[in-house]
Image (cartoon, rainbow, N blue to C red; front, side):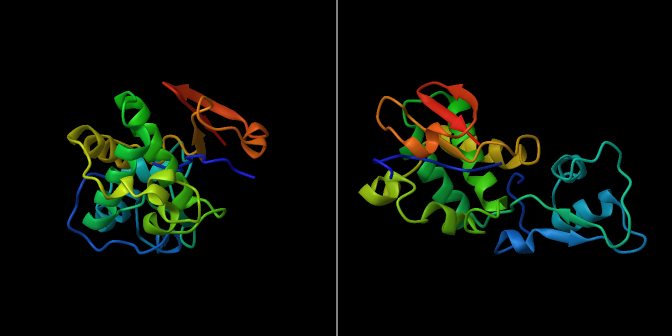
Length: 191
């Protein structure tokens, strides 16, 4: 079905020393009486505007019992793993392309279609050629690390792209049925 296709899904916050949710299921919060978006965001160490954006709220009002999505807050290991994947998948691409690749992985963690952790998404079968060929073991560049930090901070502002590939290097009838969200450099991003 796939022919050596590299695909990713993405979008959480700059480094915080807080408990890290282990899966997307843990990345929700049920609103309790007296809570505000600000209080909830502070509890998890994420920007309130980001929680608002992730939950498509035009205003900051919330109601008790409401279930809110929270950004992925990765461990240091997961940030390094994602940075190495971005380096291997998007080496030679623009900075914006690297951010977009990281965003795809983060979007996949939030999606019901993929595993619910960064490690699970990255090591999900034959999704990413760097995992298969071992190039993910190489260290990430400063630019790839920075791109991952930006993608983490960007979560909630673009939750659309779940796939990407380089059409010059791979063909896929599965991906040809998906809607193109954007093109950056040599990569096509789809949902």
